[in-house]
Length: 380
Image (tube, rainbow, N blue to C red; front, top):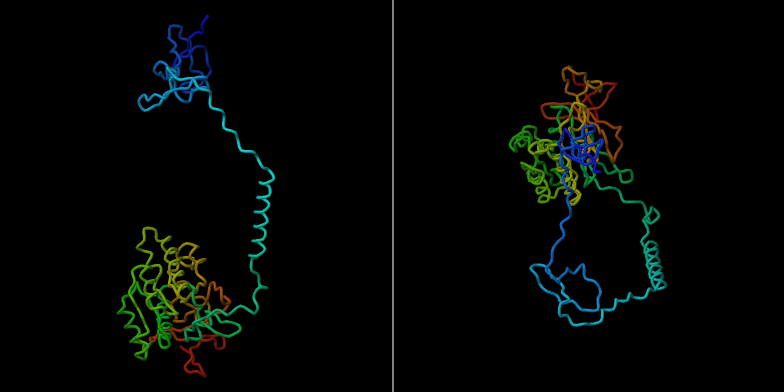
């Protein structure tokens, strides 16, 4: 007696016998008996047909008769018709195993690796005969700036470390570009320097230098290179051409604005500039925008990429942070947020005048600007 056909009310699949779950749609409780339904026959795999007396190579068996190959379309078949009798081909013997020789080879390789490790030992401090050399620095010739950049302990050399990247940010209008211009103009009196600009025109920077008499000799004018750059690649090419020991870019954030992804552009541009600075031994200051959290505007990877992070903030005459909404008094605090080559607890103060930023110092708890090398006067 055959099983009663059942049909699924959802997908109309017909099966033999009662099933709780439909094998077609997988639903539960949708199979109902339909005695008049016809159960479709199960599908069978198609067996390939070959010409009479031929079978494929994969089905060839050992026999006393040799099989003659016959080309039939794209496949090759073997036939036993009119084949001359010949003995079967003997199986190919395996090579003899030599366990002792294999073990000796492994032992020889292991001993060679141990000997290589013993000869190429990881270096340690004991390998150096004397103390490590001090990091070469380039001085800015401005003591208040060199104080923040740091100094070597043994040779007392101050300034920026060659081949390193300094990220410089601060409040809008605090004088970041002014301070960078003053630093590079002072260095230009002794050696070539590079000022890459992309926020301001070259004429604006030259006018600022002339109005404030920052460059006083023709030799310094020849050492001050200020190209207008549109990408980090152009700035790196200028560094390779001039090969200065000190360079600045105003600003890194402006270059990344033209990128499809500015955040990733900041990191990639800074990486390119860092690699070029290391290659030629140049200290580079990159001006960056500041976000609402008073940090470098951009991903955290940018801060980790820089060797130091320098900040400029508006402060009161007492050196304290200027409250929000209070009118600026012209006092500026310059300090490091992070510095791998100097303590991050130092700070310098400046006062903004028509001639630029003037160094200031604390006198009886209040800031005062120096009028001469041996005195100071208060500013009302």
